[in-house]
Image (cartoon, rainbow, N blue to C red):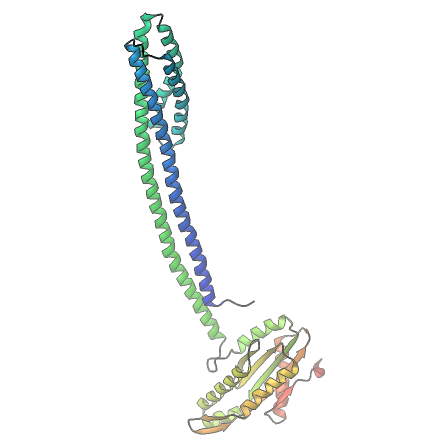
Length: 379
């Protein structure tokens, strides 16, 4: 599995944070829109119900005035229709008011009056009908009906004010809640940004530290630690074709002794350049230590691997390197190569040992040569 770089991790983390923040903003905007609509619609419906109920009060008041004046315009049927509407509307208003956020202590007295009115109206209508034959009770009925009209007028008027006041209070609370929500989102953005910035810096520094721990500072090639871990992981997959070469500079100590260690460092960097030029992915090149390098070959035939190794050896042999700004030196190298084809259970230490045995033979046979480990001897 390919490891993510610090830049990729940082990009993904910020992308996730941006999506999360976007969802928070969307939720806040949605809440703001819905709360205003629900708040407005709930209280608007209540106000409309109360205002429609107040029209019945006007009908009742007009009928009462006709009744007092013994007017021929008094219509008992109109009063009965108003009674039906009143009895229908009072329970609706009662239910909606109780379901609202208004404190019950505020509206309870007025709902009690309205419910009492609703309960008294049927008997009141019957008395009015009988009062046409019994004029002695007329004044008493008028007094009782006046009280009903007054109770309704006061109750509906007060409920209207209570609903309006509650609507204003609730709207202010919603606005304050929205401010709090936006403040929390802003705080999440600031704190989250700071945390993510710190986290990505830690990942970046961790990656830098990992690179430094796995990199040879002189040649900028991977070091022995890196190639050991990487090669072992690759070998665990049991690739069908694998080759491993150990490359060692010939008589490198002599170069250091004659021309100094800075000259030796230049030689090592030059060898690293040649290796980087010839070795491409998925093959891996590394500096093992001192004057030793190694290459891990993947998905190449034995002939292709030997050809690449020979090209590297010839390129080094044909190079005359200037050191100390004037002296031209000639360098060579020896290569020990191990190769096998077909899935096989092995370890990095084993293939390293086989390549090292081949390198020993290359040195023993006169240096500046490539020697392939003889698998038949071991297997």
